[in-house]
Length: 323
Image (cartoon, rainbow, N blue to C red; front, side, top):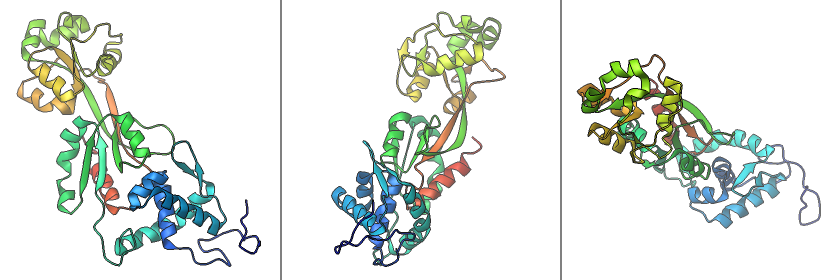
């Protein structure tokens, strides 16, 4: 739909940021547009910019009138860019981000410190793999806000603009999130030395398969034992038919229970590498083709003008490549 000015004359189409015959577009409108484009939400953009949601809505409508283009299609949850928005974003993102590094995100002449980077992921990966690598970034002045949680709700909150980066246990569906393979985690079948001795150790598993674990309590992360079921199907080629004796939604707690002699479980190797090396846990089986799960680092495309987000992303991909 074409808009009209106060005299009833039709406004011409916009082929550039500054349409022919129109006043120069306010940089603040472009900053607001870019924030909405990156977060996919007026509400998230308002939070990022320190504005009210009605102010963001008004600014986007003003920009749409000035450019005579629809920029966003309103959805039940958030917005999606209209075709022209992709073109506009590609033309303004680099100059606006470069300007932000000099003037600060709000356009103040004073240089402002970048916002904290909000990173989320599974507690075990954050604790044992992610956090130990971040010291050099903090030393450079990067501020971090770390949140543990389950992958599915974390990805939903990433879409809503709450996080900058999420470590995901699977590749997210759809095109709204950009994901990069980050690491492979191997799963291992373990128990305490006392149980290993009672059942005859790895040799018994190699000879009799999972039947050797009859009578050994199963300790699991959840009632539906997804990790153990996958191991059984992948390694033993059969369906797991037993129920857990103990469940705890924390793999560190599962590891502690198994090391304490509660029973057996299947854990990521990185999580129990120290215990396997010290003898606190025993590797019950060492198949040629162990089950592997790929972790992904996920970011909404162009999710932030904060240069520290890219710094954290690149650092994690580089340092965790050889897990």
